[in-house]
Structure formats: C-alpha cells, structure tokens
Amino acid sequence: MKPRYCLGAGVVTMACMALTQVAQAFDKVGATPRGGDEWFMTLGGTSSHARETRVDGRAWNESHSSFGLERRVAGLPWRSQIDPRWQVRYLGGTLEDSRYVWSSYAGVGVLREVAHHGPLRLHVGAYSSLYYKSTSWRSDGAMKLIPAVLPTMSLTDQRSGLGVNLLWVPPVRWAGRDTISTVLLQMSYRVEY
Image (tube, rainbow, N blue to C red; front, side):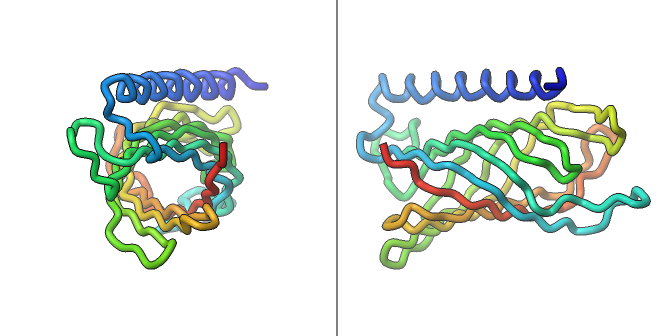
C-alpha cells in the first residue's frame, strides 16, 4: 500500500475515533436518546459533474466504489428536549473519487425530517466533512486534506433499512482553485445489531 493511502486511512481512523469520543461524551450527559441510535453502511454511489475536465484525454469518474459507516442519533445534543425529527450523523469511510483515486473522509451532519409517508422518511441538512483526496491528475497525485460543507437530502425506508443520500458539492474557490459543482447519489443500508 502506498504511503499516501496509509496516511489517508490513518486520518479517517483518527477522525472516527474522535467522533466516537464526542458521541460517548453526549451519552454520558444523557444527550443521546436510547432507542434513537442507528448504524448505516454506505455502499457505492454515482455522481454528475457540472462540466468536463479541462485535461485532454481525462474524464471524471462518475461511478464510485465506496464503503462507509454512519451513526444516526435522534435529537440534537445541545437541546434538553429530544426532538426525533432532528438527527446528528457521524460518518467516516473511503471511496474512489472523481479522479479514480481512493480517498477517505470523516464528518458530522445535522439533518431534519421534513416529510414522511408510511415508512419513508425524508431528511434535509448538511454535512461538515474533512476529505483526504487527490487534487491532481498526475500519477504522483498530490493528496490533501480538504474541508467541505455539503448540503444533503436523505430518503430512508424505515421498514427495510434501505436509503439514498443525495449530496451536493457546491462550486467554491479553495486554495486558488475552483471546485466543480457535483451531485453525488449514495446508497445506504441499516446495520442491525
């Protein structure tokens, strides 16, 4: 395994451990409601980029192999009353990014249920994440830590545990470069334990 991938895995591992400590601290002060805690796996995804690459002979990867874990906790930890329409989501994982390089990520999301019909639940909100990803098409591929805030919609079938997350990478100028507006559709599945 190349050193940069080991570093990325290490960054995600440390971030997940830190997020677990934060979640455990919420548990100790009674902010994490019992029965409102679920784990999901995120597997695979597809994306669409607002424009083509500006590099001859290169096309964006829009079919992403991935694996991630997401802990969904009902309510907001800074409120004394638990409102089950709100969720805090802790996540970490790895995916093959838009440049065909395996990248890592970890973050926290806050989403609110805005609609439901039977077992279907629609949440909207945003994730604040840190990505360790490629920033170049070169074979030596510079890997960097990139912060991001991603507006998100999430639809989950509570009966089957299947869901989809729709995330938007907005166009932002970062470190002298413009990001390309991208939409990512990601599958999720509830883990029973």
